[in-house]
Image 1 (cartoon, rainbow over the protein chains, first blue to last red):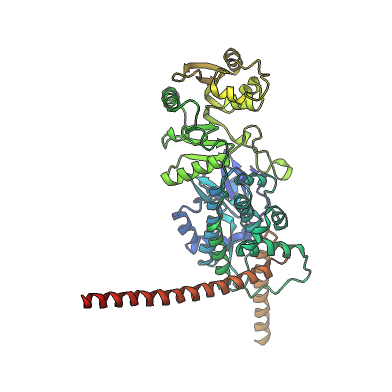
Image 2: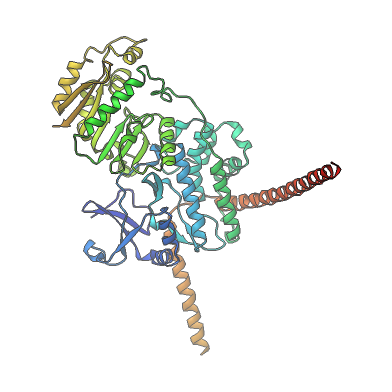
Length: 452
Length: 82
């Protein structure tokens, strides 16, 4: 029994894994709060609305080695993603969920005692709160202890994506505990202070946090009404935040594609015929772009769609929300610099390389971007793909292809090893090549491979 | 009797005090210096702006209500004239 490396801060309890199942231990000091959560109806209400994960209480706590306290088995989340992998609207929905939970708790004499995006996971297409121990008993008169954390962890990324660029959320890889308001102010443009909400929650807070006040102010005058004003004010502020509109190279990739509709149709047919021959449940779509191929899979398959472009992933997320698709999770991930392991001792939040494993991996229209645009040798690509998935559908794009010609337009062709023969022989070291077919009337080849 | 009630009173106070110490141990994050005063200021500003927003909305409603009425009266006069 080992507690999760990130589960050490909160003395209410901790998360641990046993036999590949995640459990949550509740310390006796949290008993009053847990009782309030369960008996007040708050737990039932939030689970019913699918805003909080359900759990079952395990009676045999002694079998885990605990002398006292409680053990919960929560609903298991199949894939853990981290906030710096989310796109703008995923962040916005997570922030709104946090505020809605704080408001809902208030009606049942409780409040959230922390406000970090690590309390939220995406499950079946929607954000869901996973930290059952985050609820505390509300003491009338006290302000919100998690207010500063909410601003540093949620407002900061949202405002960076609004005032600066939608790609900036990945900065939170290095600010997992929130970006201090003074740092945020230094990055936002001067005009941001003219927005009343930004001025109050960011600029004014930055000024306050600069002063280390010795004498604690009287903290008992913050009525429930003021708390509601604060939470509602934050909620309407977040609702109004929208990402800056920028044009990126990947926006219209498939619609502007050099090769036309025939190519996409032919590729789709081929992929569908390949997958009918294999047994799989989980899929990773690398370089998913608009998610065309991720969306081909039915609800029984769980798909993780990754792409380096923040706009593409955001569009895919909005599409998934609109269509109520529950089996696709879109994430921002640059394959040449994937999310690292961070936190205390670099173990709290593990790298995406460790998390991204599936039965089937799709690497469509990808290899040439890695090998040519990013200079990654084919051998390294084959070695990287091998541990990722049991089956692989990969598209080889030769130098005769118009897209590769475009990539090589302004640079020296140093890629002597980039050829179909070499691709085949390098991949055959790690995979058994099951199928190989031309895509429509192009020079591109689609392979179906199985890991050796 | 008096002593007993005093003892009971101090026991109750101790129990409440120790519960609040236990509760204190659950608040593991640092709210930040000045965070509490800031929240009070923000709540006050939001309260005022909420008040003025409602005031402005009711003023608007008053005027648009009046305007609709005027138009209705004009239409009625037109119909009557025809």
